Length: 317
Image (cartoon, rainbow, N blue to C red; front, side, top):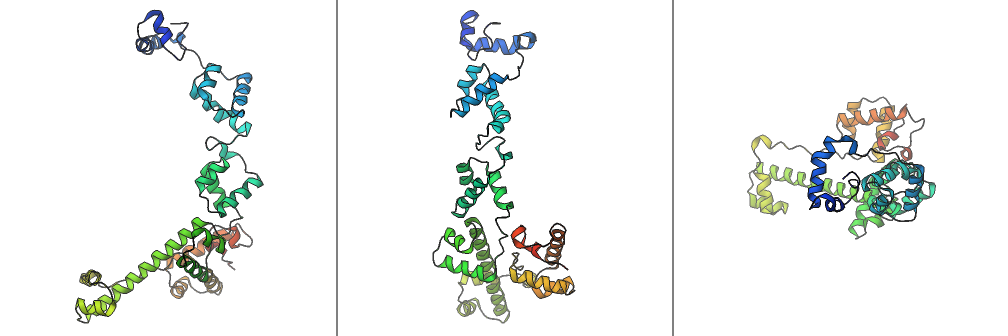
C-alpha cells in the first residue's frame, strides 16, 4: 500500500492485498489516510522544468490535461489550474476562460472587434472569434471613446421606423444610423411599445368620455372602430379609476430636449418650470441636471462622443 497508493488506479493495489479495487480505496480513505498522516503525500511546488514542459505542451496545440498529468505525476485538476492561474498570462495564449481578461487588447484587436460589431455579431460570437471573455468584449464596446453616445433625434427615430416598415433588417438600419444592430433593435422595440401604450391610453380615454355621455357599447364600437370586447373592457372601469393619467413621457432624451434644457437652465429658469415646458417629471429634470453637474467636474468640455449618458452633454454655465 505504501508503494502504490499514490497511483490513479486502485486495481494494482487490490491485486497485492485485496480482492476488489473498491475495497482498497475504501480502506485507504476511511482508515489509513486519517490514522497515518505520514502516508499522505505533501503538495510539492512546481519546478521550472515542470512549468517549461507544461508550457511547451500547451503551445503545441494540445489540451489533453489527463495525459500531461500522468507525465508530471500530478492530478488533472492541479495541472489545469496551475496553467490557467500562473502560466497562461505569461505565455499570452488567450482562451475564453482564465485570467485573459487582464491582458490588454492591441489596436488591431480593437479594430477587429468594432468591425465585427458593425457587421452584427453578438458579444458571445465576438468573444469566441477573438478568444476573449464576453465580459471583456462587452466592457470595451460600452466604455470605448470610439463608440459615441447613442443619442437619437426625432428624425433618426422616424427614419429608423420607416426603414423597419420597408422590411429592412436591424443590420441595415444600424449601418444607416451608424450604430450597432443590438442598439438599433433595442431602440426600435422600445419606441414601438411606447407608441402602443399611447394608442391604448387614447382609446381608453375616448371610450370613457363616450360612456359618460350615455352611449351604449355598440354605439361606442361603431364610432371608434374598436372591437366590442375592447370597448367593454375599457367601459367597465370602476368609478374610482375613471380618472386616467397619461403614460409618463419618454425616458429617452433626444438632442432637441437636451438643447431646450440647456437653454432654459442657463437662462436661470426654475427646474419646476423647465419640467412643465418639457412635459417631464420634476425628478427627471433634477436627475439630468445633477448628472450634468457631476460630469462637468471631470470634463472641461463635455461632448456626446466622450460620455456614456446623453444628459451629460449639457454645457452648464
